[in-house]
Amino acid sequence: MEQFIEKAAEPKESNSDWDLALKISKALPDMLKDRKEIQQLLDIRGTEIEEDLFEEDEKIVKTLSTLDQMNQELTDNAK
Image 1 (tube, helix red, strand yellow):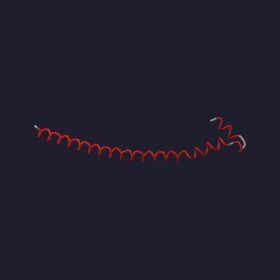
Image 2 (tube, rainbow, N blue to C red):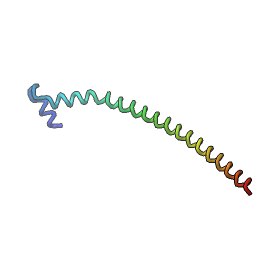
Image 3 (cartoon, rainbow, N blue to C red):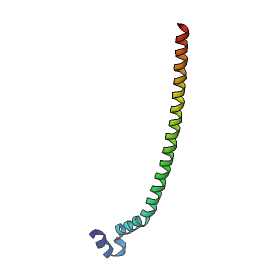
C-alpha cells in the first residue's frame, strides 16, 4: 500500500502502476458480477446435466430389468 501512496505522490508520467491499480479497482465490481452470472449459468447447466443423467440411468435400469425378466422366462421355458 505504501508503494501506491508513494507512486501517487510522484509526477503524473510515472504513475502507471497507480493508474493500473485504479483501473483494476474500477473494473473489479463488474468482474465479480460477471463471475457470479457465469457461476449461476454453470450451476443451472450442471443441474440440467444431472437430470439428464438421472433419466438415462432410469432407462438403463428399466432395460436391464426387462432383459432380466426375459432371461428368467427363457430359463423357465427351457426347463
